[in-house]
Image (cartoon, rainbow, N blue to C red; front, side):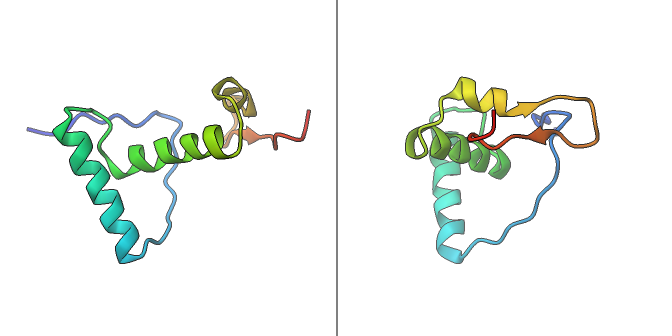
Length: 86
């Protein structure tokens, strides 16, 4: 039985490095989400959710603003505008 792919078609692969402690934190979040029956348990989903939370709660950017930052111009990569740019 294969897993259902939940990545959006416009998602791009990126690479980053994690320390052993950071890897453990990611695994703890994954296990806890799985125990709660949540669907978003992949490393990509956890990191993406964390980045959105960082923007919302720490940087003070509302979710609607986040959605406006990325415009889909059907090019090979989306254009991302800095919040200070109008």
